[in-house]
Image 1: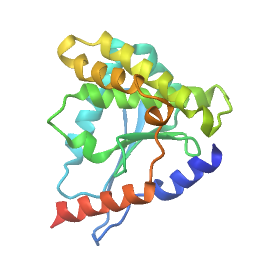
Image 2: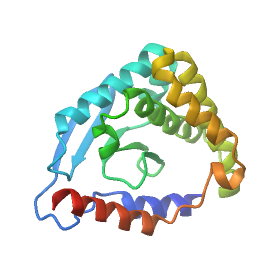
Image 3: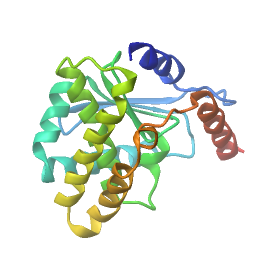
Image 4: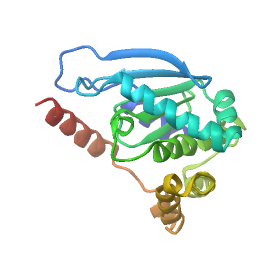
Length: 202
């Protein structure tokens, strides 16, 4: 397991420079008691908007499942917002949760899916904090634990907010082991991310 996360951290532990020669905008703050670092490499994305959505998402967790927010405060060093090849990840080596920059910038969805993603990664962080030794073969079991937490969170939300969270969690829980914890081609994911950034800056 450590080898898998080492490869992941090495590939995505720092923001990709892409074709842009400008330095990223870096903001460090604390939201709802959780340290936050934003590494914004996209000039078309307003960091203030990203932080507002992150605060809104943490507020949902604090309102509807406050113990989950308390776990985040204890279990991780903070949340890092940056370009990444998926919505979010927990990086054990850094003990941080990554929440993807463009995911936070979206306004075609509410804060609920963002909060659910953070909560999902928080469950990974809780397992890590408990000192549970995991192998790659055990990833599907842990993923289902995270998805069940998402499902419970979605069911705790008002229906209009919780519906997409519940739908996504239930769809994932219906998958087999390979489907619930798929093998990701991170190099291909990085290539697509870089292409999207180039298109955004064109």
